[in-house]
Image 1 (spheres, rainbow, N blue to C red):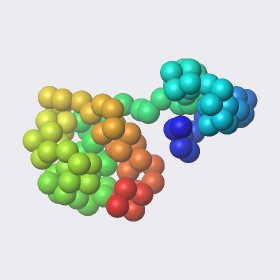
Image 2: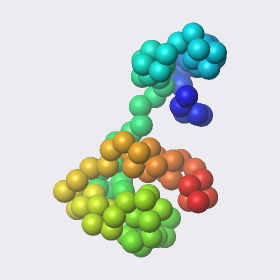
Image 3: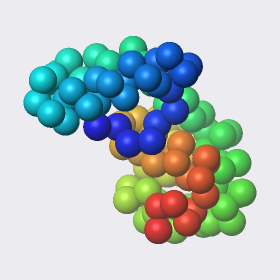
Image 4: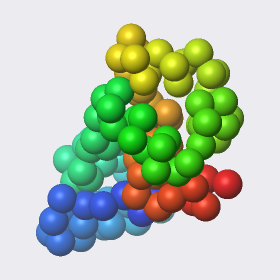
Length: 107
């Protein structure tokens, strides 16, 4: 359901793997699986304006290219970097993926 997100511990990893198998087989519905995700998996960290700017600089990308990679607008990236807005949902997960795995992981 959630891919290769890191579990909080080895025990939580085993519980989540068992729940994922049960979900795949149809014994656990999507709503219950989301509860297991929240219980067992580490949350995606928040990204403030400084961390977003540092990530973009580390990847050597302009704001426009960074926005294209994240499938968002240039104005959104600008607002993130000045602290006017904060990323959430899929954008937050993509930022975390870029931070952990690099640009090659999303291209």
